[in-house]
Length: 130
Image 1 (tube, rainbow, N blue to C red):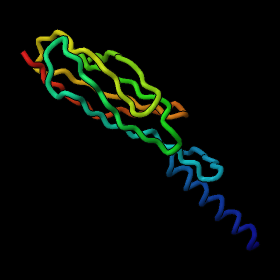
Image 2 (image 1 turned 90 degrees about the vertical axis):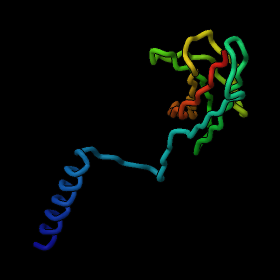
Image 3 (image 1 turned 60 degrees about the horizontal axis):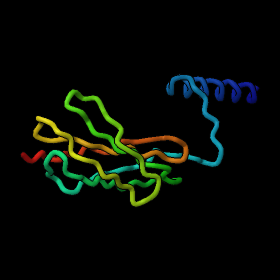
């Protein structure tokens, strides 16, 4: 009788737990909690004329290892243009400031870990000198 009560309690507890988390079941092994990488971006110089070279430098880290960092330019219409990739630290890329009527050009970096998880940096803006 007590055994039956315990089984019912465990069944109800399991059902309530699964209902509260969306019904999925996760069976983990060894506490592996792989997080996406962290990445930050800076530019040098912070202001440049069209045609001038700008160096983008990213600092990236991951709990298992960074595989690569890709660099992007954000166009005035919001689209992104892939500029290049660096697969070894220090992660950097040199690009030429585009000929634009905008007052600044935005860039960001995307770091990938060895599990192909990724995260984007915050945008950095480079002022366009005229």
